[in-house]
Length: 118
Image (cartoon, rainbow, N blue to C red; front, side, top):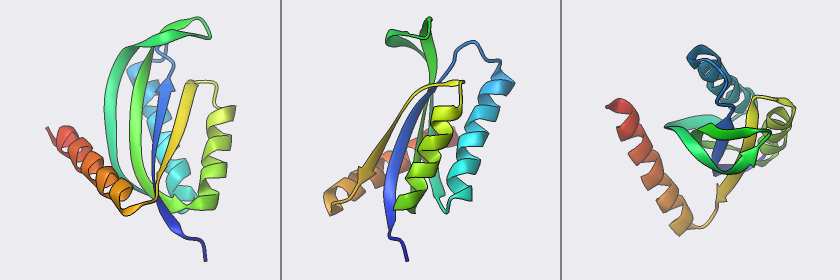
């Protein structure tokens, strides 16, 4: 039985997509996480922001952060899906392991949920 761990993933979606296409990308990420045994706790839509440097001729991107719990092996499959998705410019995973990290993860999760509820 795999251990369930706490993760956050941030991904940047191409700015050239329509609102519907951007939402479809977010749904795709959510589905991939859930299909691989993950449970989404909160999503933080950070909106369109200027990139630190140009990526594939894009100067801006839509930033999303997803807080979730999942078995360790699920990350490999989620990452594989990110890599083959040409609409995702960049992504990162952060794993929270210690009690202190998990407490911080929980706070971030709650803040994102409050922001989304507004």
